Image (cartoon, rainbow, N blue to C red; front, top):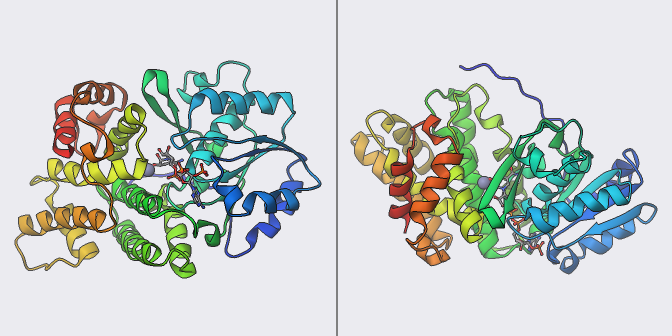
Length: 387
Ligand code: NZQ
Ligand code: ZN
């Protein structure tokens, strides 16, 4: 078992009507609020009005229009400028992972005099960040309980994961009812994203029995509850369990004491969404089974056998190779069963830029140190198999 040093300072407030506690939480932090949100879903579900009512005694500046795969320019830059101009004390992010991630980059940029890209690329270490409170409306990324954000820079095809303990939200409000309106496409993509977060921790060299149990339960919970949410989008119980499973997925608790994996599927997917602006969870669902097939070997087979038996209930008496292959097929079949497009061509990606993306990933993502090292040629083969 590996050493670790773990602390998550985020307060989680979970359940129906929990945002009634918002004014008390915000009052303890400050009066000048930057309210960040996306393209309008929070207005449609009445959450925007409710937040404005609850915060009527606060001074609110707004940053609307944060897009999926949030963009450095204009969103991060505009947010930083608004924080500086309006002497903002706290950011309230209301939305999905993109709104939260963008708000994290803004929080750090607001306390820095130079170009915020210096911080996002670790050229300069942030010394401080504004506090962030969030109200989550989409179960997927786990950004509400982790210290990371992923920011895209269109002109250079960069999509960069920026992590810093300063970026943990102070408090995350999780009311599953606000996820009732999440589309089937985003519900399925959110499930695939959170499942992949768990797989990125499960498939490693040295894992504990404890973590394997957490991960296997997490995967089963996500699959069962995503199906139930798709059948009945207003199934509170299913939306609630899915939301909490997603929250736990990306914060590292599932792999405390495990050896690192390098998060290879994320490294590959981030290039896909940087180059083509696709939905993150869909890109992951496409890549995952192809990556699994690529790394299946004598060295890794026992992980696949355990995964197949414990997550998909595959007959343990079958030969190992057959169990492992069935496990990969079952992974693919599950994503397909929730209507995720399972080929890159279906999300608008052809072979034209495969070489360029494989090179970009190999140079920028350090996958030569992954659980199973991936060099440029391996990455290319995975991408080609995903077409
Ligand atoms: O923009 P609005 O109008 O709000 O609509 C959004 C958006 O179009 C919509 N939506 C959100 N809540 C809704 C809703 N529609 C109806 N009802 C609601 N209640 O859903 C669309 C997608 O939203 P987005 O925030 O982009 O989705 P998600 O939460 O999946 O976030 C994806 C981003 O997070 C990054 C991804 O790379 C991607 O950029 N990730 C962040 C991570 C982290 N911070 O730890 C880890 C992940 O691995 C991931 O990389
Ligand atoms: Zn993800």
